[in-house]
Image 1: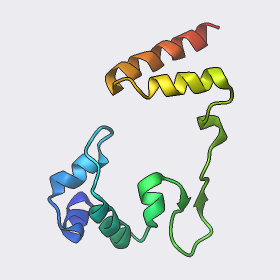
Image 2: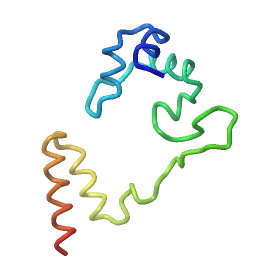
Image 3: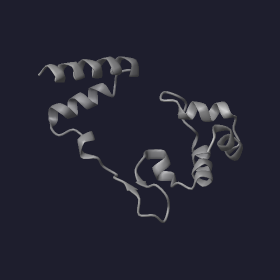
Image 4: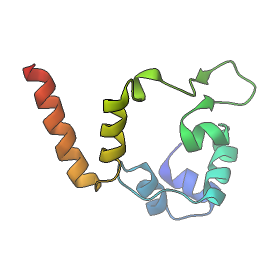
Length: 105
């Protein structure tokens, strides 16, 4: 579905859809999420969170919990808690540093 087609169906400008699709763009309101779910035929939970059944009435599921994405010990929990408190731009730099450190070990 094109951005313009979705925009027309949801009742917004095409530029709003473009913003929703951008990595760091704006997020749709709950009203628009519901409209997008109805228009595209995907479940609201999956659309909003990436978890649960993708399409109602199908066997296609996305796991609610992905173990690798959660802290496995107290030190990792502290790292996650701390990184979530810093601004995104700084967070990207911290992650780059961690990736470099992991490669050198």
